[in-house]
Amino acid sequence: PKLAIAYPSGVIPDMRGWTIKGKPASGRAVLSQEQDGIKSHTHSASASSTDLGTKTTSSFDYGTKSTNNTGAHTHSLSGSTGSAGVHTHGNGIRWPGGGGSALAFYDGGGFTYVQNSQYQVSPETSSYRSYYQRIQTQSAGAHTHSLSGTAASSGAHAHTVGIGAHTHSVAIGSHGHTITVNAAGNAENTVKNIAFNYIVRLA
Image (cartoon, rainbow, N blue to C red; front, side, top):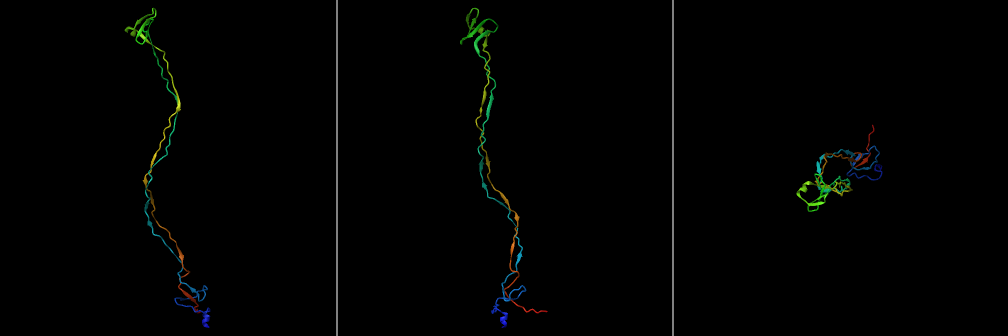
């Protein structure tokens, strides 16, 4: 009968591997089991600082690039040329330089003397050449030209841009990281135990 009072379930617990724990004041049931565990707690943690230095990217040659071909253009032209071309012509007639009424005509082979009053014709002599002056036509022929139009298209060109092989550096440097460790465990440190009533002496 006394065991039945102490163990109402009628089963005496197997205490192998278990310890006895006084029933806490929290109201835990007598003969209830509690597993082993550690009290929940936290940890501080830090990662060591590591200098990763300066890294270099891989080299790549972009070669030489060309710009598009452009720049072709034309110019409009307008204006006029300067005045030029004035001139005279010899007409084959000579007039006496010292006065007189005689003329001399050039027939392609030499001068022929003609005396107006008598219409006398004589062949050329050396004295005629020095005596007679050449008669010129009136001065004329001065003129200008106007011009307008478009110059031929030109100016198209391109440029080359040398990019070439190159690399870039990436500075990483020394740095650290913050690490958070999550809390784990029970409300208190425990071992496997079974709760029993302790006899408490009341003062």
